[in-house]
Length: 327
Image (tube, rainbow, N blue to C red; front, top):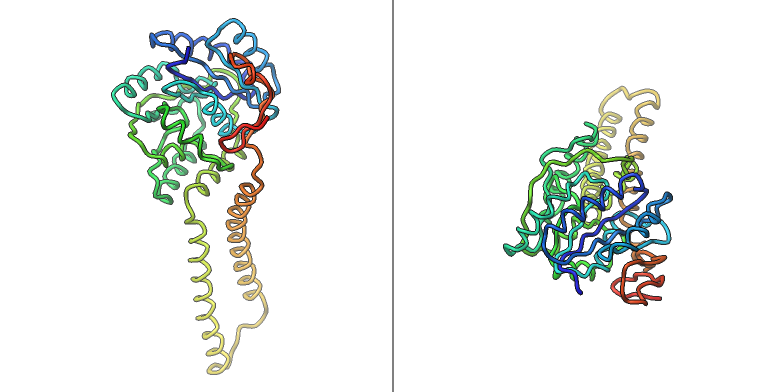
């Protein structure tokens, strides 16, 4: 029987928490009084996460497992879950229990009212460092100012989307994915549910500083070309300033009897300009690198195996290439 609701749970080294996540999700979804499936996506975990979920899937027909051949990233794991989800409404929630599963029932109520996207908006972020809170706040507001797409602030990937929205997202083939931005970009009728984000139940965060920076770059470069415009503006400003400075040097040489001795000022100016040029080349290179990723057209992910699906063909390894599946 086709599930009414699909809950997608991306996982990476979550052996300490995944049983508790399953228990809470099952308890919540049983209260929905409708059919559901829990789609756990193992994103190349190096611990016993996959083994635990295989055992749970074998005794609970509502649990599905998608096991990647390696780690492809959190956003790609969410995408795979959407590819496999069968429900009329699809919920995305992380495995660490920072986003309380009980909020899903509120999202379902909003969905029944006619909303096609219901996202969770964080009022408080417990268990997170001041540094992470501040940088997250700055990032969301920076992204909002740089793009014409209205991406809600203080939100994550925890949200419910309608089947039609899920189908549209499946058709988007870009490789460097920023799912919450894509959900905002596709439009449809959207609303929010407010909640307090809890402290991580167990284990360590899967988004250290390096990954957070990469994630921020994905968000900015996927939905804004303003950094390239900024490079043009800075280049124009520096060229204009250099032109004025040239006139000043000529005036000083022709109409005055003194010039600045030594090379300190020249070296300083060269270092400044060269630093700015290298920075702007880095911005341009970031965009070119993403164009290169798209041009290679490699599969977004590779699945080692699936568990819990009735279709025998789905139990075999395959890869996702755009919206097609190649065995």
